[in-house]
Image (tube, rainbow, N blue to C red; front, side, top):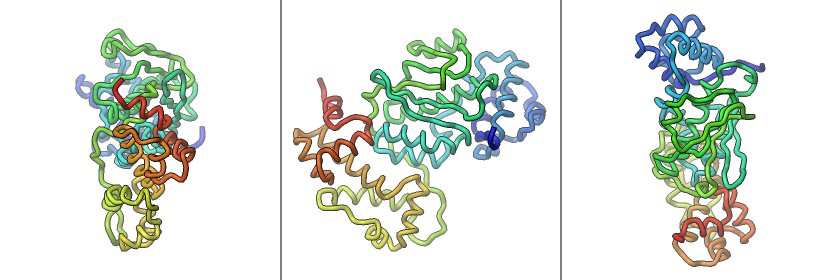
Length: 333
């Protein structure tokens, strides 16, 4: 196994909290597995993943805890993801883009976490696997967390009550009857090639329900912060779509900073100027597709695309569906 598999302490905290609440001695057990005994104070620090799984399994056995991974996953919320990952998701114009971004940035949470999307039968599967851990026992503790966070991310677009039709585990594991009763409309699969949940393709073009973004990482360079620039660009770019957007150099000049500083500020939020421009074009086109009867070619030109074919490719890259499919899905039947 190359390197040391790591996970954020944030994902160990629910396991230790449940163990504490049962009256068990948590600190000695953490120390036995070579883990910090004060994980609550180190939520954004990293610890060895396999030692964390070993702790969870030892705690489960000693206290007779049924479905420990499920119970821990129920204590985790969207805001427990790292600030940077939430910023990247928050700046995504659609659910499809957000899913692409979490696949790209998954290692911000676990350094061996590999995530990807698979399209199949009207659904997209959000798949995950911990690289280099094949054959290791008790990975279901981690795989509950691997599946719960994509669920929380989809809920930022589809609503707080959304649940997947399927939750699959790479481990050979079957949830208890009590756990299944918490997800009565969800089927569970075990022994899969990867852990995954499924999302209907019809949801991929949804915009985020809220736009509460964490601050961008601190930047010592002079000039406005990355968050300020991102907000300003999102407000400004729609005015230029049908006439030619300003270049990166022109935007940097407007902000009173160098091109390199601008790019660094955007990169701190996991973005590039082309990402913001593409999002502005998409949002304009999506609005026209929903709210007007304009022809596809007219929408393409008014959104800054050179031709309808380019428009269709760019729109599908962001939403996962074509402009015509988006229009059909977004209008009442």
